[in-house]
Image (cartoon, rainbow, N blue to C red; front, side, top):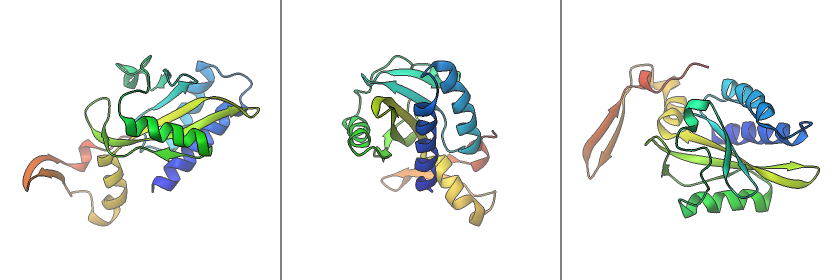
Length: 165
């Protein structure tokens, strides 16, 4: 499942690199298609060559994100640098996403004419991933429960995790 998301984000980065100009409008146009075809991503972000989050789509996801630098979790920065070093997608470990959900970030470098321009970042919520993996076999009425020390902390019906493109 993550292989598909990494491939989709990689295709997004390739399209950005091949575009006539690296501009926010181009980013938005390509992001609309990515989020429609890869609904596990809650948003997509372009980080410039200084690891600063320059563009975020959809706009609502940008609250509190746009303009920030990738310097929080060492795991996030490590994944971003690993992606840059290998030229391949790289995933962070489990972390708390911007709006409080648990998830991971995928990173893919953007190159134009073999010059590094930045990275694309795609956050994936664990609940959405579970829904995609388990939902087809469990049916629509299953509930995701998170627990700590054997005590239920949170129950989430899958209908709350679904997003329609």
